[in-house]
Image 1: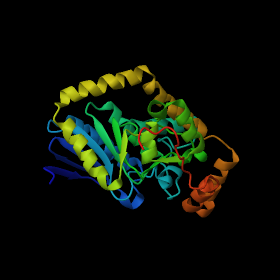
Image 2 (image 1 turned 90 degrees about the vertical axis):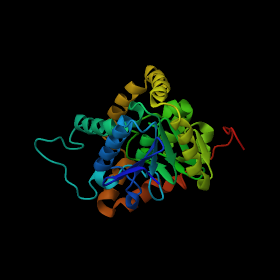
Image 3 (image 1 turned 180 degrees about the vertical axis):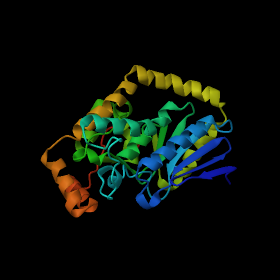
Image 4 (image 1 turned 30 degrees about the vertical axis):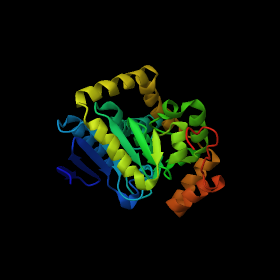
Length: 298
């Protein structure tokens, strides 16, 4: 039983035995990311980092999925939301406005990298697009064997506004996955280094709990030392500059006028999100990569 529990509109946050568990709690939308959820996640991470009774943090999702990506209705206005006019920047008015909005969103979703305490990400079900933006900012990712991980939106909508793919899987696999928008299972993600390890779905909770338990016995000051030296190495390898460039490149991709991007926008406007996604993804079949010879276990 949790010793401490806090629930906001889209996130639950409990602390027990030196472990904070932060749960994306929008299961009816498959934990799709929108502004309020990202702000609550950001604030919960900072609070966990501040708390003296927390040594390690677990990030997870409620319901069937970890996170199915960014909320298309919110991002593209398909839900009828109108952005403020006049004194506020509106999404997509200019390339610079787009980059500005992406930077503000990125400041909420890179928080797992920036805080001192280690964050374990538990991935089950779908971890798509924005879900990968979150997961790959964490320090370790454990996934269910049958999880589905990838960024299908690169087929017609843009590129990853947080981009840690290179640092997890190297240039060839990063290109293979982002160029196609194809996905991998959790098991194959472990084979190529996209996640640290994968387990049968019924074993995932116990494996995450055991890793968190082991780390929780180390003082948070010492955990911070280990995390921060590795993260400094990533920064020396360009990870921070790459995040700055990722939003610029993503904003540039939104100016594309090719047939697939144009078709997606027209389908979204005329037929709705379901039809737009169906037409975007249909040529790719099931959209899954089968990893053959990169395995480190049978």
